[in-house]
Length: 252
Image 1 (cartoon, rainbow, N blue to C red):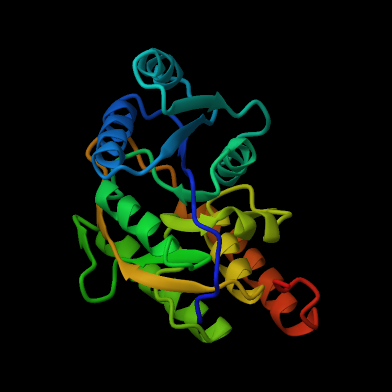
Image 2: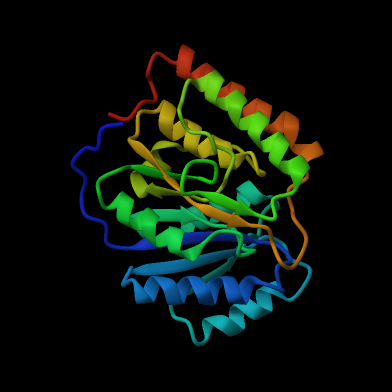
């Protein structure tokens, strides 16, 4: 996509959904905050506690006392990964946002690179673990196979060059988030709703290589068996918009 003239960015919001992440949430926030400070990226870190039953919320409250950039909030409504992200997006004050996982699987240095690319004028910056320069560490084999099949399906269905659509770790200007509303995916299927809507609705985007490592504490929240039909529903919903809406929702 061609980069259009865009206003300079002033503040980066990082939205992190968290559920029962007491073993890693503090290190995730601290490492992210340190990296952004060192690189002089103005930022706020919004961690959304999504109904944790462990000490995640208490740890966030304690951490906030010495970290002014941290803004912990609780998802008071129905729980769900997508709902938690939407809750965080509703509270962000930045003019750009990065959605990031709570388990330190995403690299803080890639957040800085997202910010730099957005400042070149792109509306969206998507990371890929599966292009030159990207990589994964300790990626479960079954998850890898299913990931590659799902992303190949999306590439063919939408005729796009992005090969890591299902990864949540992406960056957007605020106007993209506003332009993709209403967001309807309540669970992990939000990870495909946002980028696909942004592409279909005509926002500019680019892809950069990113790295990912498997979590070192806690339990993965994605239940593959439960998500298949939900992913398919969102994909078909956006596919119908792409081919039947006659551009009614496209960026002006």
